[in-house]
Amino acid sequence: MTALIETCPSPPPTPAAVSPSAEAHRDHEDLRLALRAKEGGEEEMNALFTRTRDHVARFIARRVDPSWVDDLTQETFSRAMRGLARYEGRAPVRSWLLSVARHTVADRYRSHARAPRHEPVDDWSRIGSGTVTGRFDEYLALLDLLKALPESRRRAFVLTQIEGVPYAEAARTLGVPVGTVRSRVARGRRDLLGMLNDS
Image (cartoon, rainbow, N blue to C red; front, side):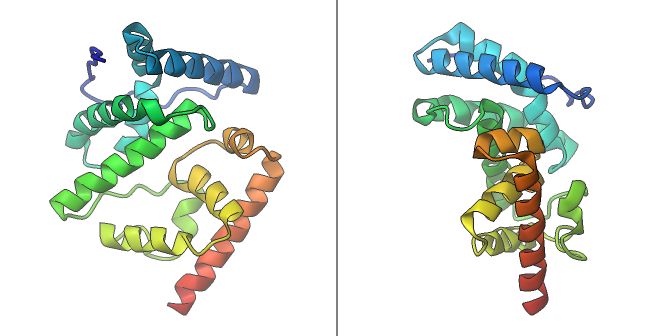
């Protein structure tokens, strides 16, 4: 399947908040396009790229040098196209794309063996002093700590604090109330702090 994907020179500004009903409609349309693209729909793949490119580019821009954003956004969608056959729609399309983007960014840093630029993001920046502001190998070490968390807390924490998924969207993905997601994230943060202080 060949799709014509064009990148823009820089990520756009952060959009205004989306209402829950509009967000649900957006997710439904993203899913429809992804499933059609999975069947070989080139137009649907291009439409999905157009709808989600800015979202992915903003996620990447918080984690890398600005000169890398276009290239890694393109690479993310190339990987997504190759992996689309395995996508079954269990998670929202945008959450799946951010997961692909996260692995793409990690692979780039590993290949370059250099430190990433980190921007403090919401509660993630308050896990511990200096935790996320050093070298990328420290970031990967923190991801290893996450593996020690109970699965429910780990999934909630990764979705909201690493992948940048809004709490409401994470709640729909996990099938739990928003308050439960917030509680799991808070407990996960407490557990991580304990492990960091013990290390």
